[in-house]
Amino acid sequence: MPYFFVHTHTKRDRPGSTMADRSGPVDPGIGLEGEHGLSAEAIKTGAQRRALKHGEIAKLAYSYWEARGRQDGSPWEDWFRAERELKERGAL
Image (cartoon, rainbow, N blue to C red; front, side, top):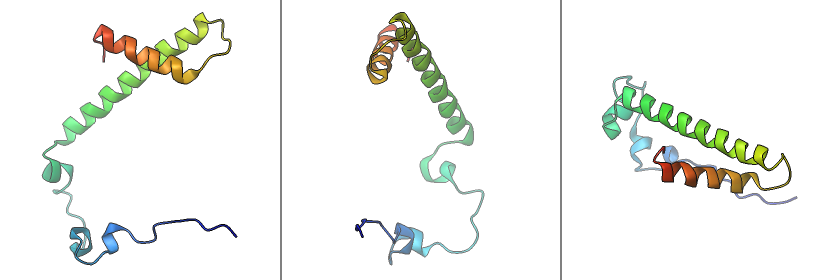
């Protein structure tokens, strides 16, 4: 039987951990806003920006594959080429 190294204890379980000291229900007023100084709107906006960037890169990478006649090639190379090109254009 193979041995798999798996973490069975989380930071939450460690004595002295700030997470181990927390108990009771989660206060909805404390979250990323309190811990990191980010508002829910800023988090949402960041996620939307990442999704847009991902979509733009995907479309451009797909166009490279199509331009190659949908033949061999590396999807990774197409992706990185699209990222580079969009950064050079200032679109990312």
